[in-house]
Length: 286
Image 1: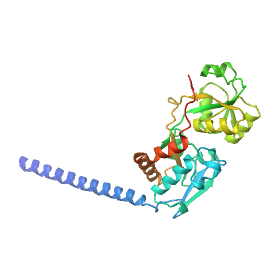
Image 2: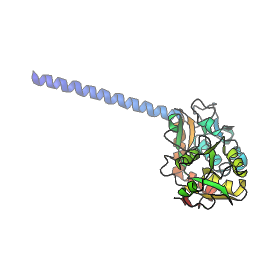
Image 3: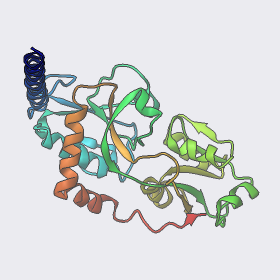
């Protein structure tokens, strides 16, 4: 009797495990099918059916967008946006652009765009209220000033404090956080354009922006502009730039898959080489 009882128990357990295994396989298959369905090219759950709505800033600066015209596809982020759109199955005619403020797009709540790209650094804090794709670029912060300023010749981070540097940055940016991490009190502006205007008027000594933007501002926007140096961001928690989406967006995984595919194929590297090749060489402030 005991032997039969053991056999009976073993049989029941085996049946239960088999049922669980079949149930698990069914669930996995359904999830895979669901994910595959959600990422069907051109049929994503987008803000407007049949179209991909992409957000950018106003203005959108070179080298990210050329001549403030993202629809041209010229400029690093404009080119990335269209490459991602194509990977997702959308033609150029199916892409729509809208303008947002930097901090408005990153605030909690629903979005009018499917994804937004304005050099949004991926951080754990931001991921609490918005989604990000896989990173498409990573850049250090840099300080832009002008010839004759009291920080022009600074060669290390300690020198900024010694010079009494007055630095500015746009609200809600990691550039602002970089200034605070130096132990300095930043001047806060609504956007980079306002910060540039303050620097031109010599109301501040310098502005902090990402390195490619710094090269453009120093060469084009600021009269006798100079790049004082880069701020090493390896310990900042900045995980690179990501496409920003609303929190728990159903297409986040699809967008990340598209970015990953562009990275794997070498297409993203080619876009980077075309538009950001000159953004290098500034000294790193130790």
